[in-house]
Length: 261
Image (cartoon, rainbow, N blue to C red; front, side, top):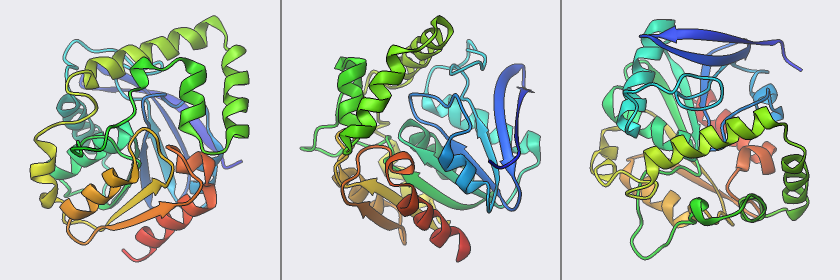
């Protein structure tokens, strides 16, 4: 595995946990509703080519749950401060699901320090007539089965969930509550975001699972229509987490958008 470390940073009074590893151009990965608890294989693979920066969002994992955190807009402005505090520039910004929503909200506000944007099965918009999956109504087992096309992977996740420690369960609950706070109403989207996606001028890659039951491929197509010049790649036999279920295809998409720019 690539050398990596975990540390705690204080950004404007908010303490967050940060994992960082690899070398090369900076790539910041913004996680989804489930959080990020380990240096996973997809991060290790990215670290072969990039300086991979993986914060746990405020309100998630071991990061603080600040009083000021009410909306995804708050999260976007926090990360603009985070980027400035770390002195990052020419960032390849990658976000999955909830993290994709945050990434797009960052990019419409200020993309000066961003070089490319990759949205992976991103939340943030609503497609009329195409219902999104409602994770708030699913049990852990049902969520795992709907998250993946490959049910062998789903079974592995169910087995791991059954072995969680009390501390891990507490973090899972914290992640769940923060996700609900940020995306309960309206469900997993900002009605204003679609109006401003045209502001994203940096090269953008959209990576979607063909069998995504949370945000079906129609959501990827809507992002592509709204972000001029963006590219959409729909991966067959893949659910909501392409970076975990179809690692090579995910890496190919990231490589293509980052190597050209």
